[in-house]
Amino acid sequence: MITCNVISPQLFWFKRLRTSIPVMFAVSIVINIGMWFERFVIIVTSLHRDYLPSSWGMYSPTIVDVGCFMGSLGLFFTLFSLFIRWIPMIAMFEVKGALPDAQPSHGHAHAGGEHAADAHGSLAAKEA
Image (cartoon, rainbow, N blue to C red; front, side):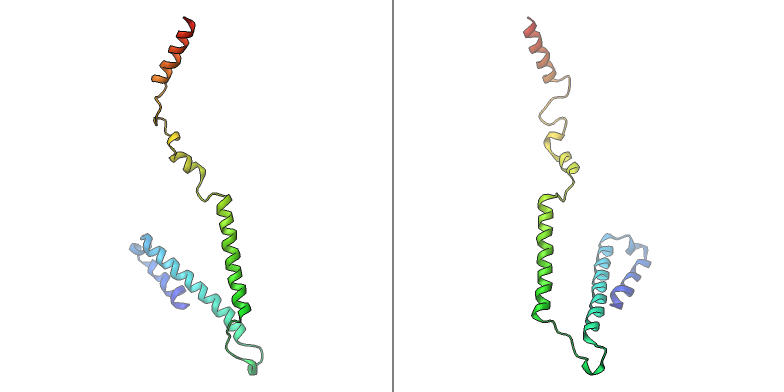
C-alpha cells in the first residue's frame, strides 16, 4: 500500500516520466491498486479484530460474502451492458462526421456541377 501510493508517484519528479503517457498510465494503475489495498486493509482488519482481544481471529469470507460480491459484479455488468445498449458510448457527432454521406464530395457533384445542370436542363425541357 505504501509502495503503491507513496513511492510510485515520486516518479513524477522527473519531467521525462511525467510527460510520458505510458508511464503515467502505468503509475495510475499502480496507484489504483494501492487504493484497493488501502480499502482491503481497512475492511479486513475491522472484520479481523473485534473489540474483545479474546475473540480475535483471521477473517475468511463465507459463501454468503462471496455470493454478495459476485452478485454485485453481475448486477454492475448487467446494468452496464444495458446502458451501452441504449445509450451509445460514441458521440453521434463523431459518427456522423465519419459517414460517407457527411462528405460533400462523396458521390455527388458540388453546386454548379452535373446535378445543377440536370435541374436546369429538365426545367428548360419543361418550358420548351
